[in-house]
Picture 1 (tube, helix red, strand yellow):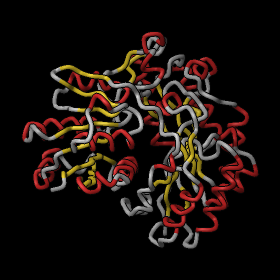
Picture 2 (picture 1 turned 90 degrees about the horizontal axis):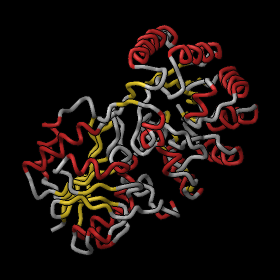
Picture 3 (picture 1 turned 90 degrees about the vertical axis):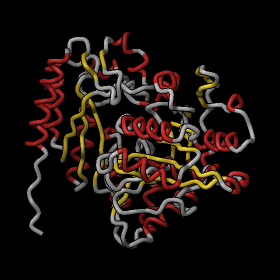
Length: 424
């Protein structure tokens, strides 16, 4: 009889986990796993369902192995689900992975005895090896990229290097594991980031760019755009326009395949890289909206967090986009080391003056695996150790000023981002 494996992600309403699609697709490459394991992906709504409902659902299938995809916004429900499930079925193997737990695996294993294994870093190869171990083919001590509990002790195996050839990971879309859905589907064309922002996980932990094969990307685009029900979808690349020749190639793929008028929404870009030629490629690709920084405009803060920003190029890029009918969302972060309340106000005033379609305000999350997390003492940061790891104070930006900034941002969000009602 096949062992039942459940891969679980708590997502925002109607979204699904591309990461777990990759994990399942890679595992099923292995003939031994295909013959001995039945892998099911379960995407649950973070807000709409309570933990008891999820546990009841799992009691109907009784999986032997349960893997959770963990982020700062869903870890609380993950831990509640895992704890209750382990209490009911002590032999169930609980495996956690993702950016919330991987960088601080020993901490989570030490605090939560119901967790059996944590996957560190990219999970496709590691989880497949874990499955073979559970199926009797290896030992935990032989698997790189995990931390685990053995005889009451937390064990840390060596890290696994990033996957060299992303083409080794089958496409979950082309394999039929994930089905594209309107507005909540994503394509990834590469991993890594050319920047090293100290508040971000990606650039520090996946610094070298690695690309999925062009042929595979084109097939995924064709699959998405062959469906008339797909009106819009997304790319999850860290920077959609990091290199103009690659942007031109992706734009051509999208234009050739776009038979039903699909559009791209909220792709991440660097506004400083935008010029007239970039605008034409965006239009060719069907881009309707983009998201960009600058997080702050203050030079000392930018230097502190290693954030790239060129004021006049940024301003010009925003205007080119908006004047071309492409909506710009500009992000500002409250609580960055080096900022003060009045420096934050200066950033707000500067960005309002650029007139992007939307301004998004967020409080700094001091995320595990980032430079700010690992050097928080050096930066003088105080933050909540519990996810989502909100900043509680920075030098010259105490908690009460952060709270004032949040109140101001809440008001500005309501006033600046107001939209007229549609008359359609």
